[in-house]
Amino acid sequence: MIRIDHLTCGYGSKIVLDNITLEIHKGEFVGIIGPNGSGKTTIMRAITRLIKPITGTIYLEGINVSSLDYKELAQKIAVVSQNFPVMAMSVREFVLLGRIPYYNKFQFLESEKDLAIAENAMVMTDMIKLEDSYMSEMSSGEVQLAFIARAITQEPSLLLLDEPTAHLDITHQVGVLDLIKRLNRQYGLTVLIVLHDLNLASEYCDRLVLMNQGQIENTGRPEEVLTYGNIEKVYNTVVVVEKNPISGKPFVLVVSEEVKRKCER
Image (cartoon, rainbow, N blue to C red; front, side, top):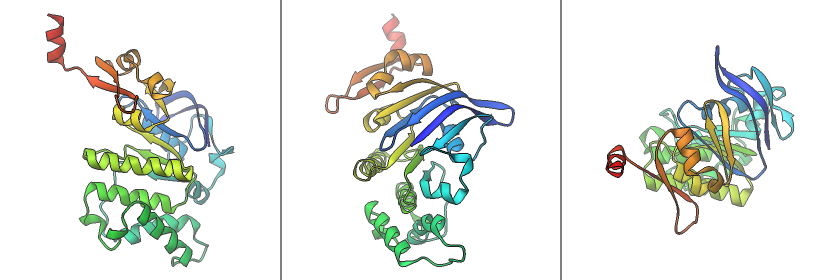
């Protein structure tokens, strides 16, 4: 689905990603983890052409993304970010924005097909009950679901999510990630997601990409990446890694400074 080949890029004279190579296969659910400033969001911006490579190439389904116009790119890739603006429009109006990449040159109104696709997306995200509600009047969790509904309405091959669970309570975190996992499993939607919560990344992702200072430190299954040695090296933090007794996935436990002092006595 995505092949990043020796990519180096950044902002102005600052290099953020340094010669990284990565493949994301069709139907995968891949999580990008790593400390702040390690280049996680920059990967997303490079894929969507918000920033240009200094060197290297990004391929989407075998096509160099630089050769695609923005309409073609928007038909293939949908993005859900952590920073969403408050909008004075209804959920229905907002979700229908996902159909704009498919409009004909002189089309100004939604077709019956557009309306049907948007309604289906709202049903899938359980937002149909709020279709007439205003985005500016909803909770953070509801707004995030509306953004996911808009992304589904784009009918993408690849869904990029940048910290979609930020600022959400545990109920909404699980709800959002369960929904994304269903889309991945039932519809074969390829998912690339940036997560700070290592335990959520462990539970939901098929494969993890651990970033460190603009380079890929490690990639593999959660149990291969979320080891004590990897986490201590990259995060410079003492942790304990156990196994979730139900899922069998790695579970990371933090160790506070106070507890460390007690153990050292």
